[in-house]
Image (tube, rainbow, N blue to C red; front, top):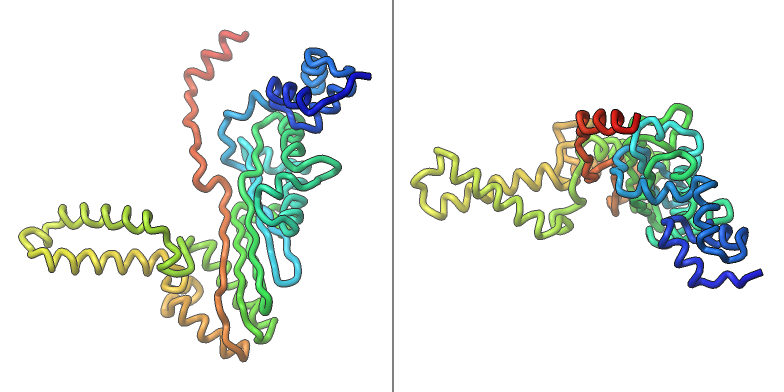
Length: 312
């Protein structure tokens, strides 16, 4: 039998876009013959995966996994919501979230082992099996030494509390009562799902995002009749006021608490400290929403119909 070298595997992978493990299997089944291996992969339906890679995967589900004092969340994308209801797709999403708990970052998650193969290759296998472009787009993990990690999943998948359309994890650092912390953490997670804050504090909002907001506000002020003819110092004060409002709407602790709009999240934390019997620090949070930031390609219905007509 021919030696299956790394170079051979790489060559076949580049030709087909199929995962390394499947390429190796194909070469082993065909005594190292690359062309025969291409046909073997085509027969198995695996090489179709590469052709789907340029199609926008903006649907799917997010999944969470929890352990003592830590939690992980992943986003597994598909092209259609229909695929998000597929049992194999959902099973994989839940498994990937559990693997994310043990991974140091997203790159290591893709290299982790799932059912005997790398996660990245398992995703390729899903593409071949289901017939849509699928991507394990991102993952994140939060944890605390003392305290709790609370979770909230919105638009849950039937019968699966860990799967849904929006997932939030909140890390609360505290030595206080765990039950009280869990209850408050869940409420904060629900708030984050609804209010979608940009960051935990002003300092955590990227400088370029603040500068972009300033530019927009400056343009708005130029068009504001109330600003016409005002001296520069007055214009500066107007900008400061509007920027302050931007921070109040974007920074988690400054936002009006969804469950009690009469107080800020910061004030709600002070109340939570009384219930927990100890200081509470909102250490971190992560919010994943399906398809967030993915550019969806506009469907050209006329072109699609014309294409189907030519094929028939």
